[in-house]
Image (cartoon, rainbow, N blue to C red; front, side):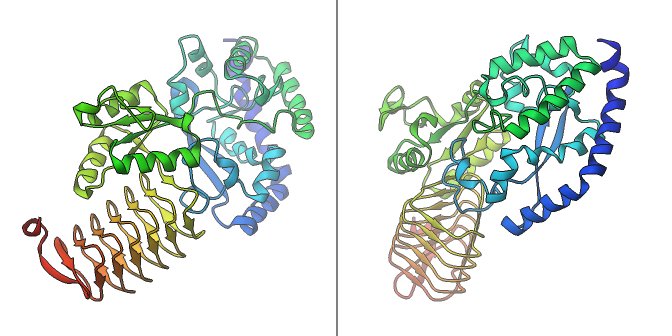
Length: 419
């Protein structure tokens, strides 16, 4: 490697970034206030990226989207629906690349350089070929040769080739040239109206575990929310479905094959369309140990308040209503036209069946199921793995591991005995 990148580039980065932070500090404060006034906290968006020699680091940006844990507007966990989540201030920040300014702190820390290949996500790096991995020989940059020669108008491969050229020709004068050209590109907003700066052609895909009736309903929600080109297909343990198509999509194998699919598709997300809560929990924990990631599917026909939180792997289907202050756990099923009133807590692996209604402040413990059309009056609690029968009305707390039926709901016995 040349003398400048080996001995002087870090000194230049540190001094220039420090000076830029001092000069731009009033602007940074104003942007922070604008973000808070527009959409609240947090001010910053942090994400793990891959740096020099494959080392992971946390990148900083001004937040430009509704926070990911917010249920509102998150009908789709995939690229393509993010546009609806961009805030008013975020749209302005992105158009002038002002959201990238906090990365000056990354430069001070030594995770990044002022100029270099843009930092990428781990799954993107996994798709590099041997030649493209040379991109990791240098620290990622706040801007780069690709950014001033087409930016987002270039294909992913074109950008990589420009990055590799920069690595081979890095010099102090070239860095100055790139920094000056970056100002012109940003002011003219060249290439800022297309895909995100760090996006590559690799696209996240979803596989649905379970090709039965519930799986088809989830697939429909996915297609309505995200467009079917994101849907890879089903997996199901029913051998008769192997190699068949369900709803026009292939059954790719068994549920146990998901980790192998994940290795073939590093951006893969799984959804568990498994109605049995205990089975869904077992499968989710097993797949999590294999580092499989889960999609959150929210039908655009659902109505969700802005302060609702929803965990990973949860499915919210058409017509469902989730009101202010509700907290929904992971791998929960909120079925068609279910109503969850304000301040409810629905814990992991629970199932709220079609047409069920939870009054305000209801607490549904882990793995519990509320049957079709059942009603839980305000402030009541349903214990873990309990089952409330169809049409029942819960007027007092239901213990764990029981079946409750009737109006008012009464315990009919232990869940195992009733089953």
